[in-house]
Image (cartoon, rainbow, N blue to C red; front, side, top):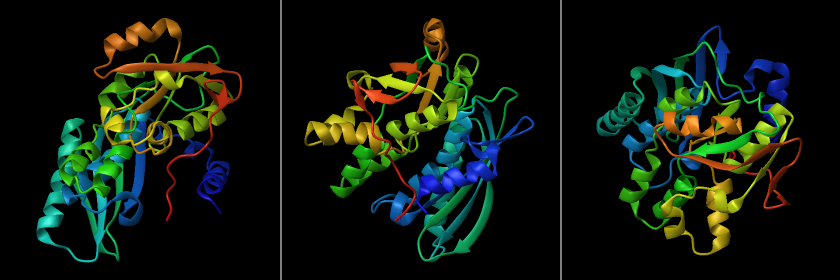
Length: 291
């Protein structure tokens, strides 16, 4: 069973599991698993691993428009090297401090490869769901896209310091809270922009029309891409950028730009059906959690 099929089955068994995080009363719960072969490239530091693992769950809290409260993580590795473990904790603690939350510990286990399971708890009384986009709204993103894809190329080239810096993304918790009063639907771009739009379309029973020349590519994409086709691959499909993808009424766009502390880019519109880019179907592919 492929990941998409497994997720569809889970959503059927657990209907409340269809958003970035689970909502229980006014509490928001998110959890993620990252492991070395698919998530931690050669040259990535343990500090970056701690930052990125906990940051992924913080991003899920951001996608619900919630306040982040506390994070824990299970750290599993072949051996517990004190310096590596301390660096991991420092990274986890620093990304939490960036979002006004706390890293409060977790558990240790031995495993054949570095594997981290992170969980974050948050709070909101008005969660923003994936299932409430409306045709006629605009669709927008925070920040820039393609940063992680560019970082992966830099890791391959041995530019580890620059790549690690790019991997230490800022979870958009503050932005998510600023967007919450205005956004009609929202999720994060962990699986890539293309797949995120398809997931939003499925959840909201709608469609999207976007323009390639409106996609806010990170500067490092153009620095690392060899041909134009690679720019599209990094910006649309590689994923793991952890920006927010959201829909919003057109008359709220200026208000949101004033309220949000990060750049907001309108990339298209919500339609009745189909996911299109420049009048062509946008393939439903992106980051997958597998070997």
